[in-house]
Picture (cartoon, rainbow, N blue to C red):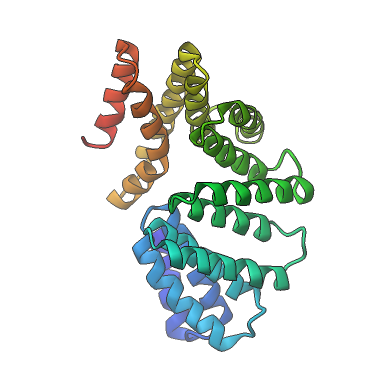
Length: 278
């Protein structure tokens, strides 16, 4: 997908020029994909160029300006450029509020991205406030069974555990797990993500057996996803992107293994390390 989008963008820029709406939209799409692939540095280059073109071509209150600003803030966050990430995402939220109706998913996802940026910057109390705001907005405008609601529940549940309140985090994670299984199927990688966070909550609550069961299930799902995904990949970029998406689950497995030297957990973690080339 990356190669196709880069090829299409080059053609649009050559034929239509940088001010063309389709070229600007293509840069927003490519930038978002690069973030998902773990290549935030390349994403910043694409998005900054696209945003400059959008701001020159459109008014301040334009959806493409909002979307490019949103993705750029996410890219800054991935690069640990925390102040820029926060300021950029706050600006994206401001533009989005003027551009989109209150029920539009963009607003919910931007609040969630701002919460994630604050969490990555170590501002955990502020992140909790924003995740709660995002969850309330998602529940009211998208519904309890929406994929974005489940994503935010996973984020907030994990943060509550991190802040020492797994009693508050675990119900959120259980709800998110049920929603993701219903929407995505039993064997999706996002189900594995939530299982990894749920395992940490279980452990924090003193249920080591359940924590081991959940992390083992999550790793098994990740292994299944790897078997299906890696065989279809034709480039190292694809492999790196897959490992980037799976890394949070790997980290949860390593965290539990460091506190529990059971052979079955050690075997699972050894497999994780092998996937990462360690």
